Amino acid sequence: MTVPLNDPAWLECMYNNRALVPEHMDYLQRWAQDSAQVRARVPCVLDVAYGAGVGEALDVFPPAQAARTPAPVLVFIHGGYWRSLDKSDHSFIAPPFTQAGFCVVVVNYALCPGTPEAPVAIPHIVRQMEKALAWVAHHIAAHGGDARRITVAGHSAGGHLAAMLLTSVWPLIGAGLPDGLVRNALSISGLHDLEPIMYTPMYQSVLHLTDQQVLQFSPARLPAPEQGVLFCAVGGDESPEFVRQNHLMQAAWGSHFVPRSQMLPGLHHFSIVDALARPGHDLHHMAQNLLRA
Image (cartoon, helix red, strand yellow):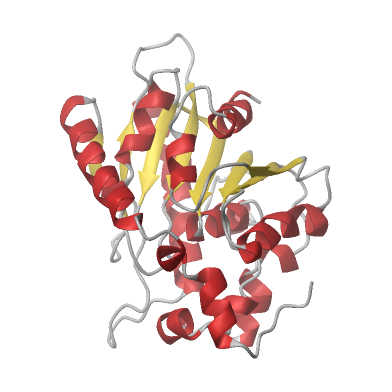
């Protein structure tokens, strides 16, 4: 398919998920309310600094029951086109996984465009996510997690970041960080080629993407990692562009590294996040399968 990059109205129709799902505010408000209840009743360690910069904090939700061996770790990265939302909106994702014996970390990052004094762009956020994962590698054992079994899941912009983390060269990022620090990743409704976003006015006006950034920070344009597995999932009711973006990774990296690239019927860009936190749903099973691998 040839994407009409010279048609901004078409691009905004394809990528404006809030317009495509008129009831999106109902989802966002419920997520925030449910997440506040989770933080009030579930053991957790909140607002842990993984760096000194803006947005560099994370929340840790230990396994519900202590185990003899450290638990696999799920790191979740929220969406919002790199410009909105917050980790506090997504605490509701943790309990179904902690009750199943996993450790969950929900991370924040600085939002684009930042300020004139401290601008924020996608490369900056990628570096922040690498810092967050380095913190997890060094400190998650104190919370019952196994630093050797880290899976990253992300939604939308978070899916892009999750896929990018599979390509990171960890020994060059920090002393003592192993190759393959991120064992597996799950990109949910992920954005894997940034070029259409660069031509979508409502996002480019905030993100300020450059041609070079598109080449360096589009997972579908990068070589497959030497190790690791990526699962990709998209809702069957999402726009044709999000469906295309979902399939790009398997085409780019091959079925060895991307063995599952799935369209889940009956889900749109917001209901698919609920599915991740719903035991018994195929998307929840996909995440657990990666965690147990």
